[in-house]
Length: 226
Ligand SMILES: [Zn+2]
Image (cartoon, rainbow, N blue to C red; front, side, top):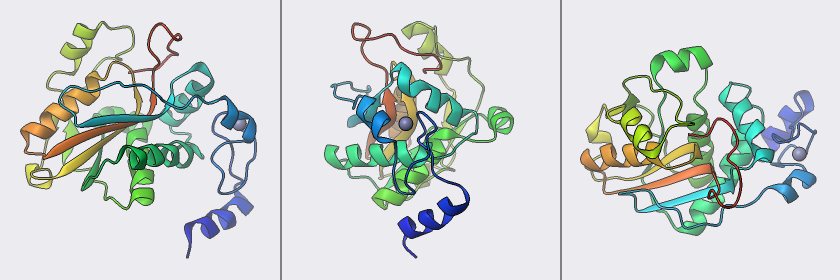
């Protein structure tokens, strides 16, 4: 059965809502028309050390941050569909050709507390749209890290050093990988992920995030960035 039809059926019981403002929207819509007009598509040349390419769907501005924070807290709603769908389009435009999608993993205890890894939800949506499988068991987060927000670039690097490990290099070796995450600020998380994947033998690593914080001169970054 077509996914769009299944979503229409599901919406009879649980109407789809715009993840930005909460208004009821069509079953296969991503955002309401008003919010669609407000979101700023990512249009910058940010790069991640070691990565073969970076893209994002939107700039991480205050109007979008609430929906990302709510998704992080486990109230998922339509956010992965909307943000993952927009990101899939950008990945297509960027021409990233990958064999697998790897979500940025969460530390086990953090995942138990929160109940949901938003990066995995995004990765699943990308997988549905792009036909590329998600590989969720190849990389794990081996220790907890403090929130990246408020840390300097150097502090972020130290905070993340050795935080991720490749469990199953045989799932990575020779593969082109898209690393999926929700928000990117300085790119230190993505750089660390890229580094360990390349060391495990990945052919190429691309990085894709729903939102990228704008450059400092263009706006203030909202809370909960990493
Ligand atoms: Zn809206």
